[in-house]
Image (tube, rainbow, N blue to C red; front, side, top):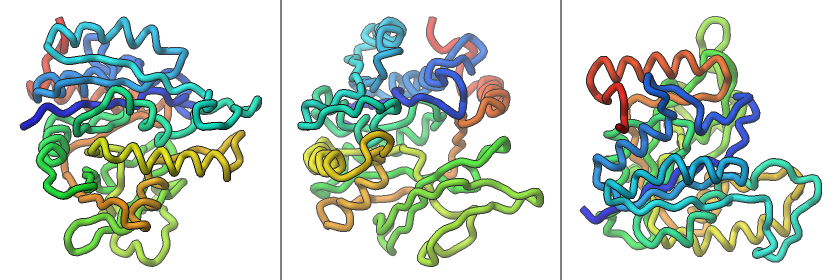
Length: 300
């Protein structure tokens, strides 16, 4: 297989978590969740790591991950700042939060010329999920077709608060028909999943496929994505609106500019949204270490 790139989005503010969760410690030897993705990428034969960062953590990330070059991988940080002058817009003075995951993806463009896997820094996806996504996108025979590795909604909830998820609808060929961001998903006192979705998203709530931002993209995604972001900047409330990947993908699918193959995995996923999630995530990692799926110390 050709060597894909791993792009990691690590510029979020983590407002609900209350800390810089992208570099917070979860593993037994001080590892972040991002460390596990990078460890998997090294062992899977990826050729490059690109981490999209905010100005506040750029230097720390550059220092922390220079070592990947010793494994034969290229390494870059891509800065996601609030400045959008290059798109012909003056940044609003009251803007605080980043422009969203779609903008984060665009910031990686100058470092990516090959098929790539895109993930969040604060989610754990696992070796098999990254392998499955990478192997499919590098061998994709269809022009302008991309890949989404989706998870079951029931496997992605937090016990400590409500979350947002992008719920997917597919056709008989497992191609994405619709993707819709649903907010305030959780469980009631009886353990039932609470979710408000349009009628076309039928089926048991817990079995619905959701995106956790594990995408396989061809570099061809950047051109239409950039066009949509420019339109977003000229149409939305620029003090608070965010440009999300599901919104962009839905627009491009609707216009038949791209197609997205959806593969649902039953592999483990976990991540942190709320501070109370940290203990659970740490316990899950310790289980994987005990099962010898990962070493107690990832990097020497």
